[in-house]
Length: 230
Image 1 (cartoon, rainbow, N blue to C red):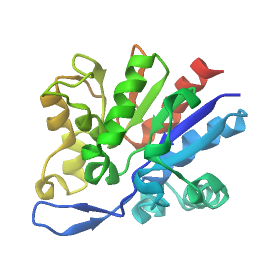
Image 2 (image 1 turned 30 degrees about the horizontal axis):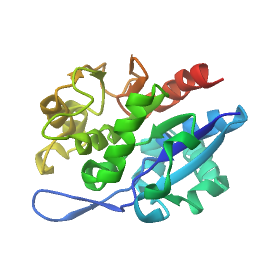
Image 3 (image 1 turned 90 degrees about the horizontal axis):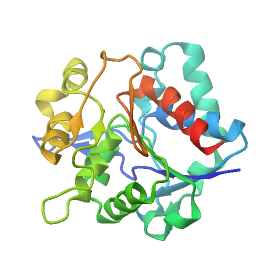
């Protein structure tokens, strides 16, 4: 049995460029799909957030129109209700990489607000990348990579990476409102940004780094993670 650390946003909003707060949190599918796949296979999940706050689900991600259907939305809600790990997270500052076999960052717009500037998360990502342990990051969660810069240089420099694209942000009407766009910031970090078709599953593997473009990429990313930890 492997032990996987889920590093999750601790915020319930994303500050837009006009100063207003856009309600958000983590995206349900990006937690539920990997959580279900991993726990069904007998692996243990531990959730960590900044300050140990109970993570907030983005209610938009539970709407049938966003989830894909009424049935899928109900299934997501069922997983979230049953996942006791969500209600008893540890503090991110207490998470020790040596205690885990892999690290996973689910997205939602929340990481754009807090993890993008969280030094503790940045140190964990740097250590995880150097450790050779599987490090999986999906959708908006690659924003956390921005906190890994040291003297202007990130350890993710040159890595092939995917994440939520400018086109996808534009399609949901938030690109013009954002203080910055994830794809643009990752490019300035020096990663080799690559992408697939909008809204379709797309994952990239470079050494021990596994990234997924969007919510639909969370389940295939989890399967790739399962292959290397099982």
